[in-house]
Length: 169
Image (cartoon, rainbow, N blue to C red; front, side, top):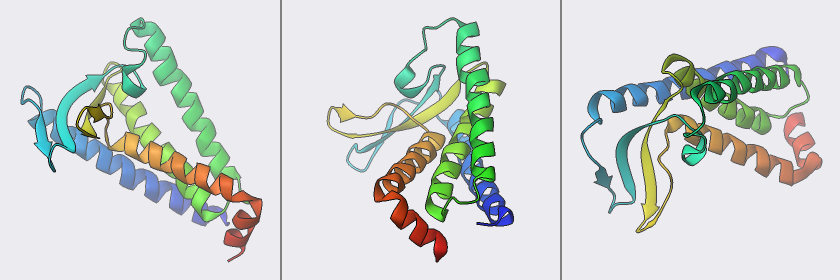
């Protein structure tokens, strides 16, 4: 795939996803704090405001702030830079893995921005589940990351034959 097309896909995905994530976080910050839990769709979806200084499910919340900054800002920043270089430089990558990696990059950039600008915290406000079986609280960037990883994993299980067929069409 040509560089110009890869860049178009990467930047349009990042701008769209990060823009949506940041917009929803602004709304959540403005309207949700001290406002309790809002339940929708028969309690399948809950909206509740929290600031997460850890990562997935709050892991790392209890680390020293300097350690959290190093891990969640410095290390993640280096990872995101490497991911960007990889997906820009990999001209043999077909469309779907590129989209998947771009979604991971977009969500990572948006959460990275929050951590760098808000003392290491990320705004989370979504929770889904049935009864007592529920997810942790997450945000739109987390959805982007998980969707991107799902696409990359599915495409990797399809094997190199299907990747070559999609890149030749």
